[in-house]
Length: 277
Image 1 (cartoon, rainbow, N blue to C red):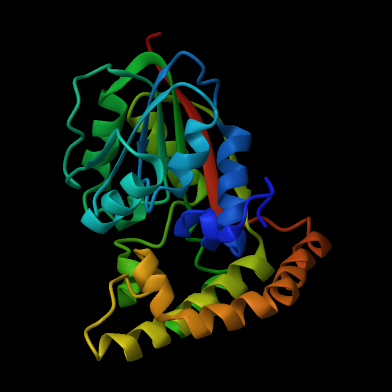
Image 2: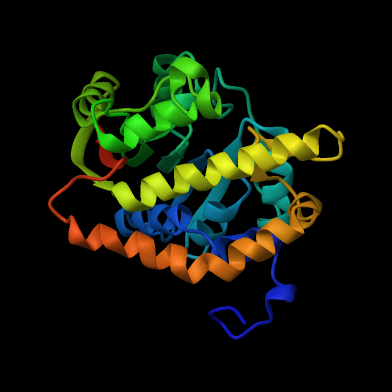
């Protein structure tokens, strides 16, 4: 049963997967904790992925338009949340200037080669005085979690996850936002060492599994780290059942993050407001 007492079989596959997530739950919580007021406002979500964040954002109120660069992402998001889902390019945002009251950019900019141009595009479509929420990896290369990423081949210099860069440390984030006309209201982090490292190890295991399945050319994976459809999830059914069985132990491992509250997280969420309002 899910949190609302519904059978899991009745849920969309994205939500079923979310119930067994580790890092994704922390991402959704950070997103909602830092989301500005949205009631009665027109809001743009960039980087909607398979629609999971779109699902939770639309529960908060406001009118949301969600977009992503991947065709499979847009397709999966439509399956979950319905309309107002667009596939866009990584060069421009296809809306008039000053159209939106809120723009939320969620864990994608590190994939964009020309991040300056695209960031400017997101600010362009935001109204003066509008709220901007920016989420991304911090990409701090001197930390233990980053060392593990390098060993696993997940860093940008090895094209890990299709990243153009490893992330946005706080100083770089602040400079980027200010350079494009945003008043920075706060930069915080989440997802500490135990969760981040376990997520990377699971992604690596999933990557290896997807490569084995891909040899039969029967799988549709994005970046070889996550399923893009219910069919894709079903094709790794045995592995997913095993993962579900050990999920309580894995979740307990991530609780060790509470033993190191003095350390910073590996993911970043920044809030800003467009000047001129």
